[in-house]
Image (cartoon, rainbow, N blue to C red; front, side, top):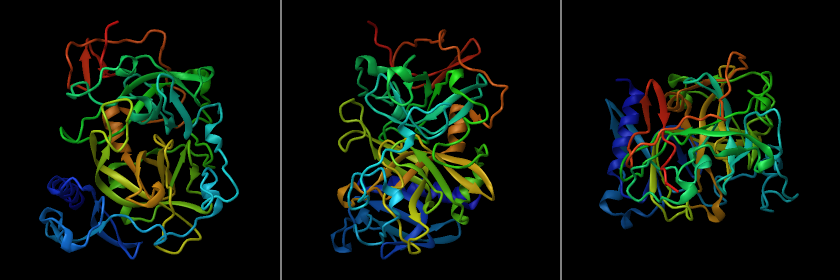
Length: 429
């Protein structure tokens, strides 16, 4: 077993031993006086960082943890005070914001929210049967059918993203499945670009762990340009990115590779003065979710635990070393691709799906999380779209569906050599 796999295993083990007040365990850069250092440590994040005298026995984190034959230092984080380790990034970082402290010139809507044709990565999308919008991260190839698909988060494409056998899953009419739903870019019935195709349903943290928050939708052929659709709104790259390998993602902390992303809320980041950097790897993160429509991703629902996530932060060419900026992402950026310049080659490393303010005032997001592209590629069976023309487009007029009795725990089944993916629960009329 290699050393990094030993770290992954140890993080999973440690998270299981922590109380509910621990929201994540990962491996990343230690923090001192509110600033990130280059020292690597095992990071424990708590809802509230308490004095040692107030801690319960199971909340006490040792100074070092042994992994294999190496002792790794630990770091306990709860976030920083609003004015510690924070240095205002250039104004263009916050043009989208209505917070006058960050953007005195007034709010500007990123072009990612416009009607953009041909389609490309980073655009605002919406399932027309859902009140929520998010981001199409990128266009990929569905290896099952060699057809082009849009990639986003499961929680963007679904109101209810849980597996059918979750005991408290709510059967709520139209929200019980996403069969044949229309996907719009950006949000209206006048701009339909495809149909829901598949997602990987999650389980609650009480019942297991998840690796991805990802979904696919078909794309209409008239919305694609084979010379443009592998690009990203607001980013100037002309090359088509490939998928990063497992080894490359595992080594993100060992290199100073620049990160990039483009989302519907905050627009494009990573070029010019705005910077994104990896802060941690192998994170187990426990996030609030729900089985009901009204409070999805609120602070009151069922929790969902994700393993092996990438943590990233924002900074700028003008900030002091170690300081970070707020908002590496914000609500609406869910589904964005996270890319890296790996030794001069642009590669997709993950799909942005969550962020945390770590208890900061005014919900100032400080850390973003992405699920890994190697996991998404493996579980949903997709490959990179680099402009190749020998691909298909799904026949949305004749979708194939099978109804299975009962609340199945299966995420996919094969019938007559055809693989069917779970789309939710079926409620007869």
